[in-house]
Amino acid sequence: MTTQGRELGRDEQVEVRSDMGELSLADQILAGEPYAIGFGGQGASWFAPLAELVRGAGLEGHARWLLAEAAALVRPVADELSVARPYGFEPLAWMEWEEAPEESMVLPPAVSGPGIFFAQALALHALTALGLDWRGNRPVGFAGHSLGVLAAAAAEQGGEQDAQFLALGQIIAAAASLVGRRNGLIGSDQAPTLVSVRNVDPEAMRGLLAEFHAIHNHPGDPVLALRNGRRSATISGNPLRLAAFQAYAKGVSEKQTTERKKKLRGGSVFAPLFEPVHATVGFHHPHLAPAVDLVGDWAARCGLDVELGRSFAQQILVEPVDWVRQVEGLLDAGVRWILDAGPGDMLARLTAPVVRGQGVGLVSIATRAGQRALFTPGEAPSLPKRWSDFAPELVRLPDGKLAAQTAFTKLTGRSPMLLAGMTPTTVDPGIVAAAANAGHWAELAGGGQVTEAIFAGHVAGLKELLEPGRAAQFNAMFLDPYLWKLHVGASGSSRRRARRGPRSTGWSSRRGSPTSRRRWSWWRSCVRLVSRASPSSRARSPRSNRWSGSRRRSAAGRRSSPISRADAQAGTTPGRIWTTCCSPPTTSCASSRTWWSASAAGSAPPSARRSI
Image (tube, rainbow, N blue to C red; front, side, top):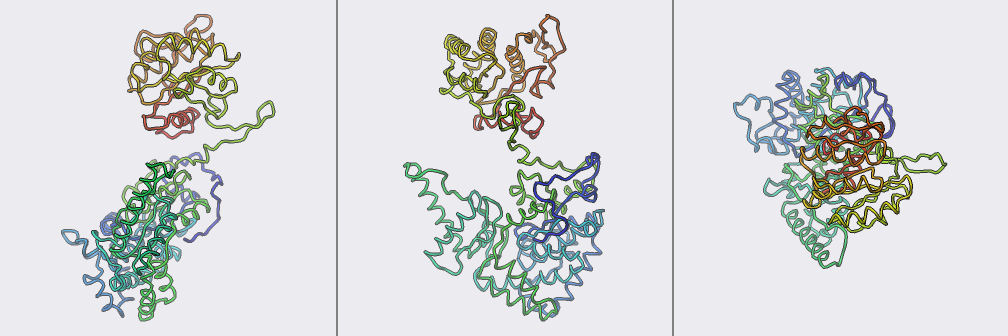
């Protein structure tokens, strides 16, 4: 990964003009928005995206020139290359066929390797042709995933030596194919040499690979080739040895599962998910080291930079890749956007989990959708929020004490700690009153209020225990139809108790979400319940089912303005707040409630707002 330009720092705020929303993303980048360009590696389909790019951006002329220049450079080793690629390397000629070429022609590494670089070089050329001068407005950095390091280095040179890099790409890919076949690192879809592993820490996978190699000690044993994410990796090796390792890993997983069932161990169970990678050579494996010398010999015969060729061959064929570290380097340099130069959108999908929560956007510029998002005004995707924006802040209270401030505390005026309504813990009013008197959000659990008499007794006890000015909240359980009807429905004992019981400034729902129609009816009940928090502001129960019919009465008995749907969605009516948790049964009620509180403060993602 290479970086250049002023490093902004991961947490440095970048000033964006107020009219940025009216500009295209390309215009925003030209105006100073920091960005980087990334290049994907093997494993993705390259020919179809290349054909779409060439035809859509009118790049036939430049593409023919680039192919001709590279072909002239590798002519001294043309016979050696033909052994690895009997169909040659003629992507533009293949585009003119009535039917797309078969995978057996474009998938072998001797063809797909240079094909991937060719597609990436044309994607950058299309950027300039469409109006984004990336040479004049240099990115913060370039990053290449595996084979993509070749395109990243070519971009660092401004694209002036693309023909030389394309020639090196053909030599490296052909050498990998020949040495891989000789050393048992050539596979197929049914017997892959590269396997993606998800749902596991790459370091844990590295340790398991070491155990496996210590037992078998075979030169083709799999190794950790790529660290793609914090919970994903790719392993490389001989197809038979890879299959043996997957069986070994399955045995470890089954053993840990059995031990956990017998309560002999705790924590999560080792459960990796294996998926073959669409590549036929086991890249990033030490058994491909002889290919580095072969690349050096061929580069010398072609008059290319020998040391440069050997360096790239070592990086692509032998050394492991840490993509997470490369992306973190871009984040530390202050990028706001990463442009995926292809092929396709594979790199964007691979990088999305790595940058999640960092406030960084991804655009696949080699696709039509990505080009539309980049160059069409008003089509630019929104930057995601940084998770750090939701981090608690230290504030000093009027009495001089230090306290944590979150979106929840801003909304409720209470501490960031929440005593959620959970049966049977918070059925008793004692613990609820203790938490409420200490300044926390405290909920009386509805799950234990199985009859109106029991509920009345608990409400009376809560009223006696709450200090003046303190209030508690009520938690209704949607999963139980009987309790929901008792507390919220037509009988609505909680509403009647609210008028005679202690102050209640909130009402939450857990274990399920009402339908849209029921939800609005429930909101009306929320308004009536929460209005009990102040004797001077009570909501009147409307006869109509229409939300617009719900009105408040002031202390003087006059009708004021309607409580609007917007007020409800914002979580506030004049002088009142409440919260809701319409999470599915498998979702943590407390976490959903917290997100809604952030939504009411204007900082939650749209998906959280829609869940209300």
